Amino acid sequence: MKPGELALMGIGGMTVGFMLAVSPLINILFGWWLSPLLVLGGMLAILSGIFYALWETLKISMRFLVCLIFREEEQGKPAIRHFVLNTRIWQFLGGGHCPMFLHRMPLFLFLFLGTSTFFESAFASAEFTFDYSAYAKVLRGYAVNDRVDYLKLKRERQGLNEYMKSLESLSKENYEEMSRDEKIAFWINTYNAAAVKLVIDHYPLQKRFGWKALAYPENSIQQIPDVWARKVLKVFDESLSLNHIEHQILRKEFQEPRIHFALVCASLGCPVIRSEPYQGSKLDAQLNDQVRNFLSDPKKSRYDEATDTLYLSPIFKWFRKDFERADGILSFVKTHGPKEAKEKISEKTKIEWLEYDWSLNEKENKT
Image (tube, rainbow, N blue to C red):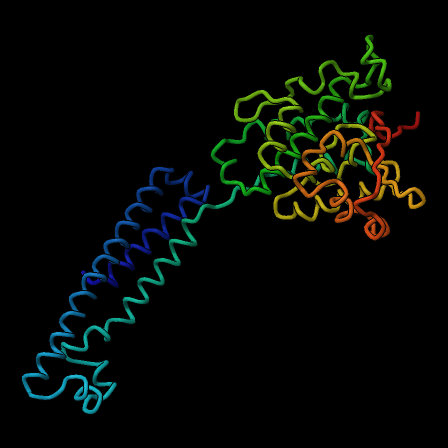
């Protein structure tokens, strides 16, 4: 069988197999077992075609050289000179046993380029994208003007429950197929949704007894017992808390300081909640937008030119190490902060910490 026929058979088999692999309907009709067999058969056929093409190339090249050199030497003529002066290019490309190498060369090039392109496009690791449609609906309906309507959401929590259930159904294999940004977006959305779930599970919040509870407002997420260590959901069959998601996954694995302006701990002192889910495809722009909004809020960041003092949210103090890895707090603020602060902040600028407002970031409902 000729290499072209082998390659065409291989490409055809792999194309059908690839279509079966990505089409849920066809897989339902024909079964998942058929796709791997066709893909494997196609790969073997293409590899056979490539091997045959390489072998033919080697044989024809040797035959061409031997024919060119020895036949012309027998006639007493210098081979190269005779070839250049007396052989027309179309004759050389078109016929005889010696020029067979160049005659078949376009076919070989086509086979190599075509199959390599096919492998790259069809069998490269496809990035998995999580479906946030249920969460997007929750945010559009209950995240109003940077606040959350917990009262309404507690009454209509079906959408949030659906999203939390989808988080628990994510497989480890699909997670590993996510890009880095997609993974960060996944965990930010998971954290924020879990914090909302904890609040509505205990809503309306009530002040507890004890010195720690007394230190926070009555309507604070801190009134929930062990709120940060409490197991709130399962991912990959592992029970996770807010602390685990933030410190053991997001901070430890990704070392992205901008997450601190996207994680919403259900408090007025934390960043505002977006009315859309975070997505890997636009995560960079979303995080930058969150940082700009945070640093533009005078309750969380402001610069006093008279004393050359930068007043910042204690978030920068709590996670100082994260910002030091990004060239330090002052450099971070100069990069992402308002224009007036960028121009005036220097290495001599002092930093003071603002009070953190632990009041619940809830929408004010008129009664």
